[in-house]
Structure formats: structure tokens, C-alpha cells
Length: 228
Image 1 (cartoon, rainbow, N blue to C red):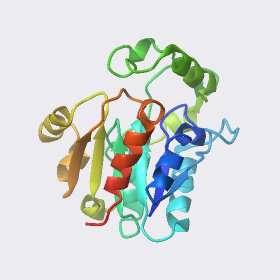
Image 2: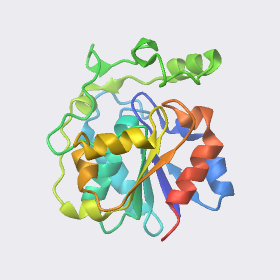
Image 3: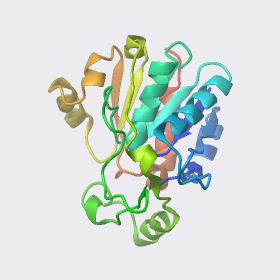
């Protein structure tokens, strides 16, 4: 199965370099997506540009792909399910949840000169980053790509309720499946509260398992890609 891999904020397609061979060894065809503004040199990209890149990958896939979003890009994966509900086999969300219609995509940190820079590790002290050693932290920070304001402050639009029929797997790194279920049941994640097929799976990692647990992450994604 084609598995489309969408990195979160500040990441380009190379973030999946250690996951790709693991997925290939499990018989799948991973496709890391280069998002406009996060790997193509553009600083004027918009959220619509990124959505277009994801949908182009869905349309180009062989058969129905699994669409994987990491962190903020969980919203992009869910937008793909909304825009192509009959063309997507499922959605896997790593360390994040989808926003509802009308929410800003990722207006999370200070903007300067039209971009949102990687803020350093201080905001991520604790479970998010506890499993990252110093060389990995340094490598991630050095490779971090400023996110264009037009992406971060873009508005999520959802229009097709058939998205709720698309199977969802939530990969839980810095939080547990029990915590995720509590948040969903409490109404904190209304999109998943309405989804008909939601599985929650654990991974022993922080927020960036593609760097610290690539083999286990690949195994979980391969399981999510299995047809029922």
C-alpha cells in the first residue's frame, strides 16, 4: 500500500528517512511529501498550497493510500480525508489531533518577518523531548525550516461528513492511549468524537518517534495500512 508521510512543523520530507526503509521492508510504498514552504525553499507558501500538495499525492497514489500526519500535520491528513473520503484507505495521526472547521492551522509561536521559527527546545521540555539525545536535538534544530505565516495562520476548512467514515489510527507518543480516549470522550477532540472507526495505539517515545523509534513507528503504520 502507498503510505503518504506528512511531517509536522519545521520538518521536511527527510524527517522520514529512517522510517522509509522500515516500511519498504514490510512491503509498503512510503511516499514522504515535500510540503510547500517546508522543503521547497518557498517562504510565501500558504496552507492551501500544502493542502494541494497532499491531495496531489493522494490522487497520484496507487490504489487507496494511508495518509499519515505528524503533529500539526494531523490536520492536513484529516483535510485529505475530508476532501477525498472515497480515495483514502485510512488516516494515521502521530502525536496530534485534527482541528475542526474554522480553526487556525498552527498559530502557535511568535511570527517574525513572515515566518514562524523553530522556538528551540524550551517549549518542549518534558515528555515531548525526553527521549532525544543531544546530537539528535542539535540535528533537528539545525535542519528546522521556518514555517511561512500563510501556512501557520491558514484556516482549516472541512465540508464533507463522509470523513467520519474514514478509519483513523492515533499513534500516541508523549501521551497514552488512555489519555487520548479521555480527551476524545470529554469533547476536546470533536472531530474524532464523531469518527466511526478510531483506534489508539501506544509507542514508547516522545513527540518525534520518526527519529527515536523509526522501526516501531513503521510497524504501527504498517499495521494501520492492513485492510480489515
